[in-house]
Amino acid sequence: MKELDFLKIINNSLDNPEYLGDDCAYLDEAGLFVTHDTLVEDVHFSLYTTNAYLLGRKSISVNLSDLAAALAKPLYVSISLSLPKNTDNKFIEELYRGINDICRENNVKVIGGDITGSDKIVISVCAIGKKISKYLTSRNNAKKGDYIVVTGEFGSSGAGLYALSNFLYSEEDLINKHLNPVARVKEAIDLAKIINRDITATDASDGLVDSLYKIALASGRSIKININDVPVSKSLCEFSRRNKLDYKHFVKWGAEDYELVLCVPKEIFCKLDKTVFIPIGHVLNKDSNPVVYIQNENNTEKVDDKSFQNNSYNHF
Image: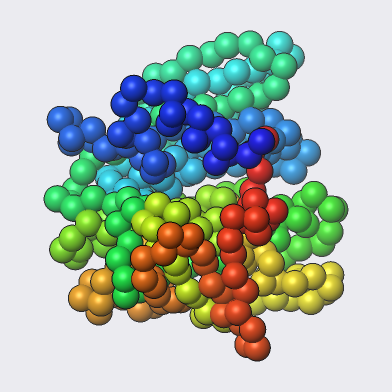
């Protein structure tokens, strides 16, 4: 069973699932956004490929990325740890040194949490942010003709994970993109100042095409992008060439790049800094069976439910 199947069951089990559907819930009566993410040892990380300091940074960054996708200003985090009996003091010191550094860099305060025993290390973070725009973001806000816009380079984190998992030499920036991601908080705050309507925004935590397909489903509209317009790093191309891999597979399906994926109308697109926000496609008509079309040099790939299930990141 995959994540989408569980989400359907959860939605159908609750009397009021109105806050579900996006990675951040907006609490209108408080003017706050709340998100929650969990990192589980041997599912989301391995201590053979990372260390406590970087793990601390990443545990906060992935939550700040969700707040960025909501165009919210981060304020607070609460951290719950589940730890094996043999966890030593040095691990906790380094973990919280990483947490403290990333929180200081983003003016975020740690306000509490919980510690329990466990067979594996589990880091569960709740992050709270403040609404700074009168407009909201959601996957279901995409409209016909909207520009698909992204920040940063895609595929690097997936390639970094592939290198670590297969003991391959890799350029340092690919490894860093995976182990120490940067949430696009500044870019989100800048965007919040210029939008003039509700828009679609998400972060590519599970991959670019994963994000696009979920937007297509939520908005009921198909999407078309040109894969050659998606920003990629020279390191990704070199790593893929050296190891006889298809770099475009990392671009499409590699997870944990934590870049913003947006659908914005022309009037907002024209105001964006094109060195930061890169157009890669458009939103199409209403569709009873929405798909994502990926234009390549000589062909167009169609991502439907079957191809999505076969390629998307599996948290289980």
